[in-house]
Length: 336
Image (cartoon, rainbow, N blue to C red; front, side, top):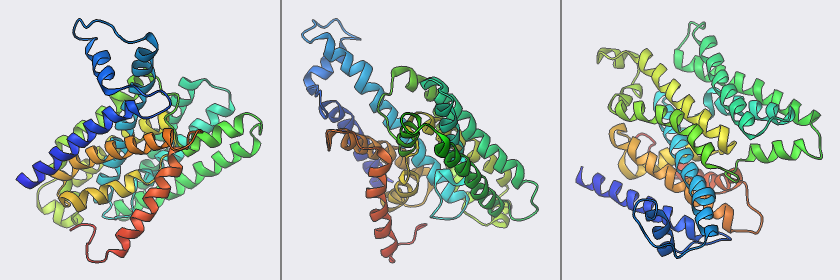
């Protein structure tokens, strides 16, 4: 346990370092010394030696984007981790139940109807939740294995939403709306405002806190249904809690960031390599890893080229080779 605590301490320190360095990276770098003074000036009476422009960059531009990357990275990673345990499948990601496909359709529809930014986010959030609700309501009507039913219906509902999204892209204005829809679908945190972070903070918190408090019970979901019942736990109720929490987190994340793949698939595996499959330690580790990973990816997106690279492209370029490495590493099972 001491070794695991040291690893978590290292990850927490790495997150803090990455947080500070994120202000330095970019077209308008803010020195760490100046950054600390600007932040502390909101608490202590410090003589102002910096310009209003720097203060605007820190509080209106960089800080909201950094916080959004931390929240989205943590949410997608944790959702992927709990779903992989619940479905007993290492290839499961947060969009398995159609939340991302529903959110993508909601955003594409809102862009097509010329909604403003807030309207797009609300539409993506609502349709993301609606997608999962449809999956669950249909799956409970099927008298088969509940886990298999959820996966199958999730794939089907996701495919339907994806088809509707493709239809909207086909009929959208090619000069204006189609490029906007395409860029949104590739994922980005550009243009994030403090209000955007405030809007998604509560849904994400409502998803993370219950899963964190119930993390010791999440190990039971990895067992067979009969084995879990012999331990006296209501697996059906626990499964509903997991779905609701993961849906809230993922829908809120997708509403402000668009579709960012591979995080919820790869990061949980990396967490298992570091601390093992026990959800009591895997949950906090995954939260830290996801936050660090997306923060680094977002910094790369801002700094690698003069034009910002969509996050979905970078996460795919990095995540896919890493997952191939995991598959080739036959000496380590996903749940050991």
